[in-house]
Image (cartoon, rainbow, N blue to C red; front, side):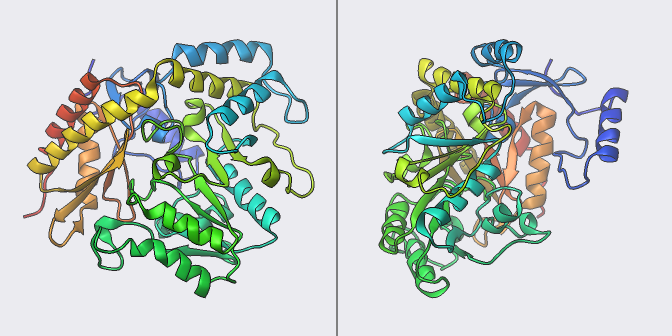
Length: 440
């Protein structure tokens, strides 16, 4: 059964009512009438009324190898029956096995991991370790970044709506990000000479102590709207950060585990090896897991003791290791690159058809559309973006949104989708775009 105009049943209405009554109001839902999910399988999700949706957002870039993939859910079920939890106070084969697998796929000599439960925790651990390892405090982040929901992560974040409630701003500064479509310097790539990258050096010299502990960035900014830097960007930034003695942290929470195609981690697309790498989301195909990975000499500079009560628990560790195995066994790095390129072609065709699409960007199966009311003025189109989400849902397609202005569509299906899935998603996007009302 495919989706249609959503009608509230008594069951879904009751779930939504209780959600509003018992959860914080700040917990955001998509759609005018929130979708109450019931079950899922591979690339599909069903709501509580039995309507089926093609999922092209994947639980916010988390369902890496398909919903309830039997090669992941099977080992997880067996592990729950065998050993579910003890904490990091007790070594076990599952956490060690996962750490070894991660060491085999990470770039350079990043071979030691600290496991947590989320991207927020992974980024917190990375900044704390960088400050300990360098004996410095200043951290350089990027505008339009998103790093998580804790106070420190909110401070690293550079979206007003995600920073509210108080941040700890001391020691953290934000450089201009490589947002070529809306260049804050009013320049045009490649004639610009990648001036935004040089702003990192300028910021270190003027708005910091001149001795940074670290620079942290997402290879492709996720919540920012899949903002994708030019190929030279990170090499220029890396040289500046190292010149001033800082560590380079790659936030791979959304770009990790094959999401950008061909490579395991997004930063590898820019031919840079970070000092510290953080990841979460797709690492365990939906199980709660975060990891902060670094070289042994940096890990060895952590001061004092630490534990993680739930981090790296046997169940999540098994899920993560199984996810890595599926990506390898099913050649999903290559599939992501091939099918992603095919999807990009389809999106480029839609851009030619609909003036609402100002830009198509991204890599692999991390592709974004920036919607604008006028291509010349680039006026953001957040209302039209919301319309598109609603129409797509009604037509049976789940997509995401983001961007500072709420006008970017985020497309991130499981890495094992086929070209046939792309054809269907493109057809549904085309239909949905045709239903969006754009002011004259």
